[in-house]
Image 1: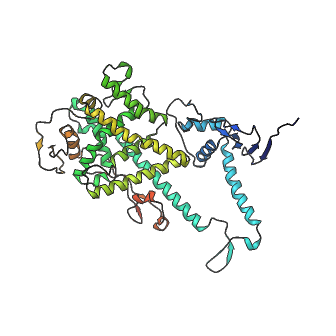
Image 2: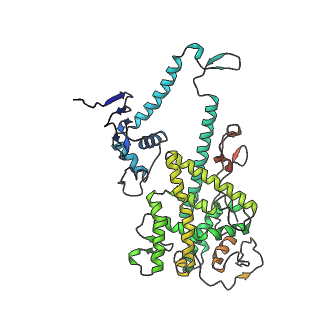
Image 3: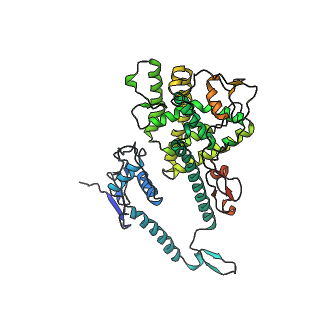
Length: 457
């Protein structure tokens, strides 16, 4: 009788870093963190390559995570990317050791040095100094050093851009003067005014919007207004079982009787809230989505110069967002996550357009303004960028429903923010071959102009 055998090879890596590989019919283990297929131990626990890489990146970069719920998220093969906090805690609870990662880094460096010392003299890598003396070079080769400098500069620039975008969100949420543009108690409770005032705040600080011609700014904001307002509503509803409207009232499918309203809520849930909840979208990602919506170079009527500026800025945000995601996920997972985020943008425009076409729904969600035009509004033949302009518009540049939006733009409603400090970059010599991710952000060889600028009155 023959007995099937299973061969096991064990390599001692010390302090929990033992890696065990097996061959044979029962060689496949399952990851203790997510349950995916795994062969061998990584950092002290049987884990799949995905959880191994996640744990290594988290420890190497000292990443800090937070849980949006009760710190008891389910971590399995299909949902392991949903909550990084709970995934990392499960890695620790299931035996993965942070100290094993530092031991691994030390071991790799020691192995490289000992391997190099064991080479015959005539095979040792050499470098020649300025005085002609050859000596061994234990450091990386110059091309690798340059690549490391480029990667570090790219990562730092991407992180700064994402942080600045998030800073806009924080400033608007914490600014108590944002309602100073609203006149009277009745207007202060108007959903449309609240939504538009937030969008104007973004436009006043998001480069290059403050620099665009006034008519281009109006075209952009009119195009993005409804979708931007809807995203704000969706963001406020992510952690609620209901739809949270701009005026702080709630909507629930169980309490609705209007077929139009039921259909609208269903679309918001199915096309927007459910996908964002499934990936556990973060504040930085939502802020980046708002930036991408406003940096829209293909709006009809924009000047060629504005299109170029918007396209460059949009591409910079896209690259920065992808680079930011790559610091947290593997490149493959980062690509999938970025795709899922970008798919939300057309859904926002589609759903918001449907809502705005219904006057009652548009008013309810703060997507349109159905109040009669002010009696002191004046008709003009062109739009002028004057601080106190009160305008009606010709040639359908702005519809009458958008009078509030244009009035806020014309008066440069929000101008209460202090300028952000200038960020310095490394010397120009080290930035010569930086990948395209940072190029939209570089205005000169020695300085790093702010991606977010004030729109000063």
